[in-house]
Length: 153
Image (tube, rainbow, N blue to C red; front, side, top):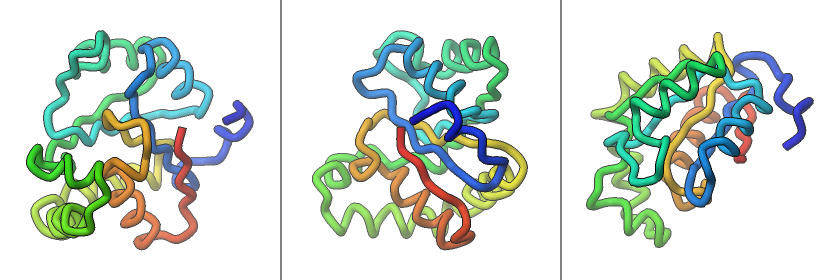
């Protein structure tokens, strides 16, 4: 993605990003290049064995670059649903859709409001967007507002 592609205004683009296989510095450089203002962490538990990607360290590194951090645990994919999701089973996708439409609705709606006013990236572990529950979140974002472009980096 080029730096100029990060120039769309708030509400026009949402970035979907995973940190799998990335070092912290490269990850942060991508966010800066995309002009991200808020990183929304959609992991159920914001802990990582990968240095710099746990909640406290990540939020501090983001703050140094002028990016806000927001954890939305209710948007996380339950542990028992992750393997099925990565394997592309429709049952896992339906289960997460149900969660997003019910238990996580309030958090999802708060992210929609955030997107209207700021440049947002959604974070989880999986590098491949289609193998991550971010794909369901972004599909629902586009259903809510079809003018929002989803970019994966």
